[in-house]
Image (cartoon, rainbow, N blue to C red; front, side, top):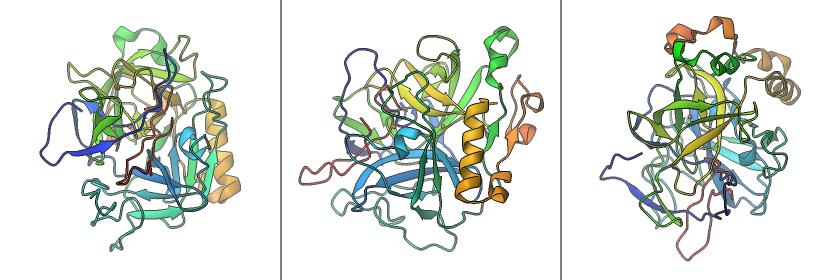
Length: 348
C-alpha cells in the first residue's frame, strides 16, 4: 500500500532474490489499499516446525468454521523447514501491536500464542495439507494450494465460497463487455519499494485493494494462474510478502474466491501479481476430497461452490453472489528478531 500511517511498523524481511523472472512468494497488500472489515473470513496464519519454532506467516480464508484455504508453499516444506503446526488469527489488526522487544502482540498474542477472548479469533492446528507444491517445480502448474484444518470452530456470519469450474474462462474473451476487477485481501507487507530488498513495511492488519485482470493465458499462467495488476495507480493495488494464500475475489468485494495469491516477479512487489486458480475441476476435487478424508463428508458439504452461471460477470457484491506474494519466490515472509535470529515467516 502507498498510504502512510503513523502506527506503521518497520519489519525486517529476509528475501532470497532469484535472478531473472523467477517467481517470488507473495506477501502483503500494496498500493491503494484500505482496512478490510468486509471479509472477516480472511485470516493471518503463522506456521511452526516440529520444535515449535516460528517459520513464516501467510494469509488465507475460512471456507467453513474449521477449513482454512491458503497457498501450498505455506503448508509445504522448503529449505527453511517443514511446517507441522499452525496458528490462525482472525482479528482485523491481528499483529498491529507487535513489539519487537517482547516479540509479541500484547493484544492478540501474535505470533506465539492465543490470548483468550469471548469468541475464538485465534485457533491452532496440527493438520496441514499441500496440494502438491514443490518449490515451483513443474511451474506454471505448481499446485500452489494448501489447507489447514483448525482445532476449534470459528463462528462467522459468512464464509468464503469457491468459484465453480471454469468461472474465469469466460473472461478470456469479450473483455470489453465484462468487469475485469478483482479484490485482493491479506495481512502482508504494505511497501517494499522504497527500502532495500531486506526491509519492508508492514501493518500486520487485514487490508484489501482492487486489482485488474491482465492475462489468463501466457507462459507464466498457462491456465493455472491468474495475472493481475500490482502497480498502484488508477485506484489499483496489489500483493506483497505475506499475502501468500490470501483470496483473490471475483466479482470484486464478493466472498467468491477464484484464486489464491501465489507469486510475483520482482522483490519490490511491483509490476504484476500471479495467483493460483481454484476454479478448475482438479483443484476443487482436491479441496473437497481432502476435507472429506481429513474431517468428514458433512464438513466437505459445507463448502459453498458458486457455479459460473450463478455469478454476474459484470460485477456485483457479496449479496449479489450469495486477497508469501509468491514472486516466484513466494509470498510468505519473516521478521528478524533481536539478536539476529531469523525467526520469521519468509518462504524463499
